[in-house]
Image 1 (tube, rainbow, N blue to C red):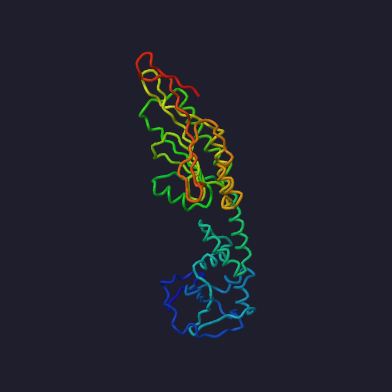
Image 2: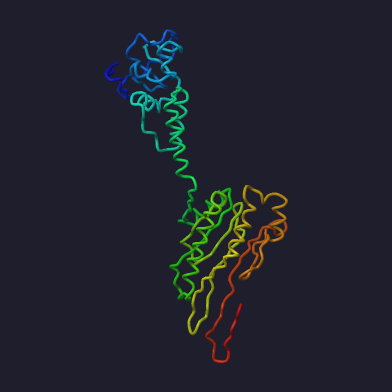
Length: 330
């Protein structure tokens, strides 16, 4: 075996011969390593070469191994054997050398480093890990992430696997089959703004997702326990003078009401007797703006229906002959 002994540098696993099969046949020594200058460490199969001075820099398990306070296991080839994972041990050694060390970006790896620091009783590294975890948690606290649907298969998987209620807004301004009425653009923006506000208000309780691939110009869907509970379609066709136009509505009260209704599926509460009674009675919603339809009666008494709320069709003028025009008002 050949290894550099200067500066207590870490020796990579490739530069050292692998431990022999007799490594586990060593002995425990209680006298410590104080009589040595350099130390060979076998940490879970990861080999390292450092100095007693480095290991003794902090009051830790490693210092107690050096001064004899803790027994050490040494194999037949002189390697001090530590029964720990060696993945993060280079970071531990670098912290002892420099007093500080860059920590992993991954939350999982950072928690693994914290576990190693706690095992070796390195209080400086423990505090470094804890303060970093706290800063990252404060940075991410209050973050609201809205998934964007890229395919129907992805949408189905997301809804069926989510354990929280789901609210989906489908908006596709590119659907220009007909021209839009004067207020449609404003109402479309109002729907998007309401979606963002609801996403912030119920962040963590409801999963909000956006779909810009569908055919609907503006449609809200509400899901609980993996199935659609209600739908609010905000578009209608207006027959203006000699042409058809698309009208976008903003039924704010009804959308907010359906969002509150969907909360009965939070934490599986809809499976209880009270939740089922509310579902069987059609919820607490009222027809409000538009027409409400209940489709898809399920097995066991019709408590598996979808409330479909569509705005009424505004017909100002159709293309019939003079004297046969029909006017409908809400």
